[in-house]
Length: 223
Image 1: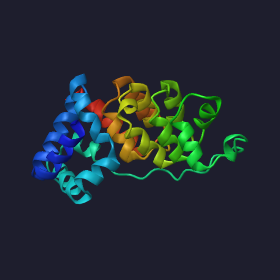
Image 2 (image 1 turned 120 degrees about the horizontal axis):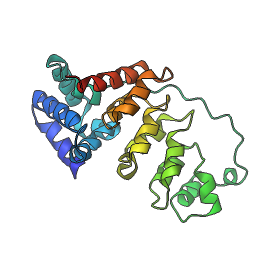
Image 3 (image 1 turned 180 degrees about the horizontal axis):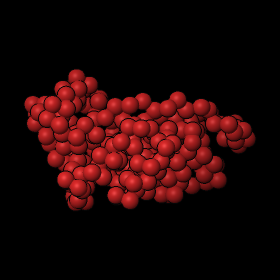
């Protein structure tokens, strides 16, 4: 429901009002859990682009730059993921014998030894089905978010899973992964506590724009 309201608002509001609303909610999300819940739909960049449109988002971003609305600029930050190399690991002798369709069916089904082996799959489509499985455990999602290398599609599926991306440990795992695109990692910085932001700002393995974003949010407390 919150997602739909955001999409409708950002499609129909004048760009300057949309920029002001995003900036307000982004800053408010730092202090109240209610505002954070309202804010979270904005981190799903693929859905935002698809429902609001690239042209509308560009106009909102330009207005935020003119008005120096840094919170909105962080939310609409762009940046590509690092090219992920294929994982240097031998194929699983059990799951490699299964078709992709069969693997996807098992990944979203009952917990079985094969299903648990598939949780280690690097295939984004298998990961997407696993994230839809209500039997999945938090530590397993954290393991997926922490993989290095990790395909960009996997991060897209993570932020599109509202039940998981709302969890602080999953947010942290995505942001601290150097393979997460800045367009996903930077908006998630809004959700992280100050101590984690300090870790991000000092981590030289992360993209410079992610570290700069952490520093910007830390500075909000001083203004």
